[in-house]
Amino acid sequence: METADLSHHISRRFNEDLEHLRGRALAMGGFVEAQLAKALTSLYEGDSSLGESVALDDLKVNGMEVSIDEECSRILATRAPAAGDLRVVVAIIKAITDLERIGDEGEKIGLIASRLASMERPENKYREIKHLGRIVSEMVHDALDAFARLDAESALRVARQDRLVDEEYEAIHRQCITFMMEDPRTIRRVLDVMWVVRSLERIGDHAQNICEYVIYMVHGKDVRHTSLEDVERELRAKGSQP
Image (cartoon, rainbow, N blue to C red; front, side, top):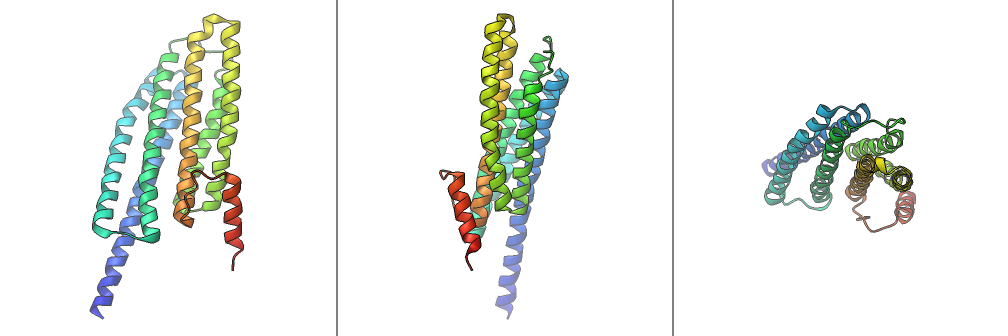
């Protein structure tokens, strides 16, 4: 009886450790999401100091990644998790790497925004970036929400959004090239805009990666090199099984 009680206590403590770990990863995600929002606001409003402050945030993001990674390593070494528990730890290790990279891209956008603040703002006030920025910000938010709720179906829906991000990126890229050809005086500013949309496209990729880790946690399947259509068919087939 004492052995059973001890096993139950250890199991409960381990579950608490995993939940704490997942909570820390989600807190890092929330911080990175706020960092991206600040970077985009600094661009739209021409706020140089806000853009520079985003770069300082990146140091905190890096510290979070290192600290969470160390905790994951400790759990792997002392708990030797198996099956679903192991998948949770592995998914967190991967997710915080993508979150750190989203932070890096947010830092780039903030630094570019602080530079663009000293230039004349375009008449459309970066409307094309606002649309893409809204899609990508929602992707990050929804990917983290799926991660929090371990919702594979929502994760798959969010992952599909990356195609829309890629299409928007290509359209803005072509538009920027046209602007530079029509008025060479805009080249410097338009090149910076192209770097911003490139960062947003990469953030969309990282959000998609996080969604793939959710599917891995829930279903134990690595879908990184599988088409979304095939993933959807497999999940539907699993759901219809008795």
